[in-house]
Length: 397
Ligand SMILES: [Fe+2]
Ligand SMILES: [Fe+2]
Image (cartoon, rainbow, N blue to C red; front, side):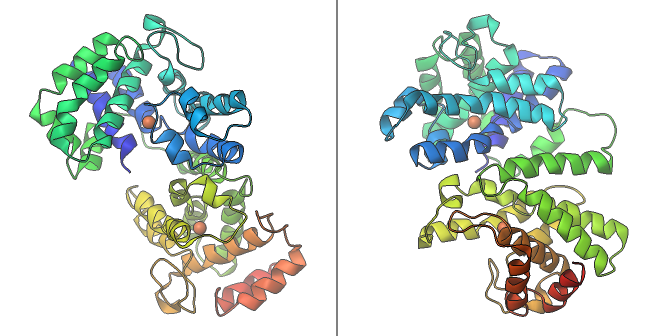
């Protein structure tokens, strides 16, 4: 939790102390926040290949080379696994560009797993052939994982330099390791890194961008993120886009004004963004979930809420996505709300969500026909779903 923000903080501190121009600081700022964008894109494939939790693969790395990870796993085809693992860098970079971000941001992400000695991926570039910003990102990512590994921040501070020196000239650019050494002497650096308001200070430090995004640009960005969310399981491809489309129709059908409908559509695109925190292993599990797995899964609406809450203008939408698994009969989660406390918008998203789930293949069953799905919806009216909304939804077909 908070890894990307801390990597961003370290990377931008480094950029400032190196005196990089504003334009490059801007690239680094976004690249570091999104550097793990490729992880969800490969997690379902990796989970299928080796049956382990991707958090073990990625959270423990980059400190562990994939060759070693393969040794830990029951590996059917090591090259396939290494290939899938390596692909996360290129896919992440490509996705950043597809989201509409400047090419340099994508390129910085792609090369952030190149090693100084040429043993990295995807290209095996070495030393100064590796783009400078990628080298900075790599050092920041490595430093963060060293720091995050240690509960005690004083010990983390003491260990950092030695741990970075261990891999200097092998994985990391030695000159940048020296630079970390120098910034890590400053108390301000550490106070900033562990500050409660890190999110806010990053927003303040955000390099200036010209102009406001149009609504169309916001929706297209949300669509891109929806694809990343849905890629975590082979069973959820295009799911968020379908939920959003249906939620929009339903909102219109109950007579909500246009801008309200648009906001519901946007919220529905992102309603499962919190699922990025749920391991792909759990999302694709063909069996009944264990209690711990269930608890992890049931936390996703709260994470969705937290993420949307941080986006200006989406504070209300954040409440809607937080309640998309609540039920009128009070048997939902995470808050166990009852009808009058569940926002209408959440109830709309819930109907769309259940319908899309029923008409999609699941790890444990095939997709239902439209007719059968309507039967189930009708059966769920009043308990799991809002009766009036189910009625309106049926009348649309
Ligand atoms: Fe990372
Ligand atoms: Fe959900």
